[in-house]
Length: 214
Image (tube, rainbow, N blue to C red; front, top):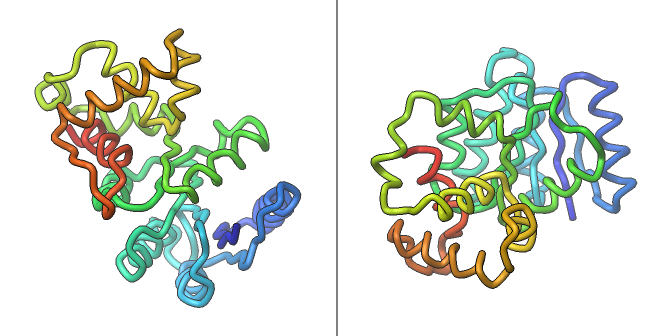
């Protein structure tokens, strides 16, 4: 798996590179600025981009904006945001097209290497990896009840864990259900949210988008 990493702090950038390589991932570029990230994504076309939000030269939302532009150039490019902040506008835009893996983790809430590497792998495979705190902030002030009123409480529980990026097997363990039951709940969620099967979209990502944007 080929990774492009963007982080402006040298020690963190070097540490993340070594961690990923130690777990069998190939870091094809580790850069420190927005322009370098744009060049690396265009040159390497990685399996996944791991991106900090605030990069030089603006130190505002440079990294996330470059990643979004790269997804427009390469639809479905998997992007995992690793930041200290929740940038709500661009986080929603990152999810908006419903294709390709997406994730958003907060640096101070990544507690071990396995958690981080698992998130990178999930996003690269087309899944999601959303920190619960990010989800909470994106849901703040929304009227999600009206849009998701078709779902019963158990289906909402399944969808909430789906939004964090968990597989059906893990959701089953957390909710004390069989994996078959979770699979049925997932299918029902897709049906109630009018998410038809398609080769061009990822229904789990679209369901998470509906949950976050409702």
